Image (cartoon, rainbow, N blue to C red; front, side, top):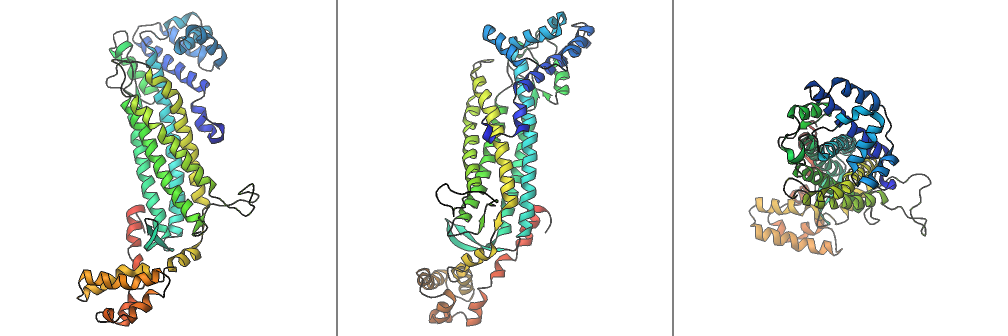
Length: 435
């Protein structure tokens, strides 16, 4: 985790102190269940909670023990025994390290998912507000980066809203999939621990029992979780690139808010650069980069190995922290996005009416002209306009072959900008549920 791109709430989930507290809770809840089953004394379970529930674990001490034992869970259990005393001998009975590690990881991922879902909600709120604000603001739609036909800026934002609504649904599903608990002992057979212990711990930690584990929780669950984060990152980059293109000097239909005292360049005082969306683009690349090791972690040897462990210790915190930062930044960009309707209209008009070429094409075919001939007639008049030689409407009205099918009034009728927006309300109702 790089502090520059880390927010405190998400970072706290991955701090050593948080991890050790979760480990303790897993062990203590397991002790409670074992006490109820008569496996360990009830007084021992109570003492474990009483001695360590509010303890601050000595991270340095645990690290010191681990340097000798070369085992992180044993190091923790040794330190826990220093806090709890003799009753610590009843901790971890019948359990294996992965019971603690995997259950803890899934607790952390579900907590991280809750923050990310809240982030998406904030982004959705900003997108919805700005979409309705510019519901009927005309702008040019582009395909291949080239002017195509008119759209509205509200539709651009509505598209993003729909995409991030899907992102939220996927993340909710990924959270559910990864929210499992395994307290099944070595190789997952429950030979040394009752399945009812797992059920008790799962409920206490807000998880559900893993239906069948080996010595680890199956990593296909985690692969799906991080793949979902990767897809969300791609959606973020799509919106970020749209804003970056719109901020180009030659376009300038929208731009990131430029605050008082902000500097755009160390050399050129006039610069106002899309640094936030460029930053989001870079962070999205990093989140996607973590998907591959998550996928490769699925294939472990037999009932377990630890080839997944080192990778997860890095990409678990990094992917969630990075996406949290980027989502929060993107919501802020959308919320404060500066929009220039006059420039949108100026750009829309810069091709001299060529954006209405399809309407002329259709009108000609409806009057009896073949599609092939209609296309030829429209293109014949469009190309001079493309070269800056006149405007489309005037050239069409002067074309005798076009006039065989369409009157001047019928030609002019095809240049109605509002015609393109007659179904905006329908689209908004589909996306937002209300027009």
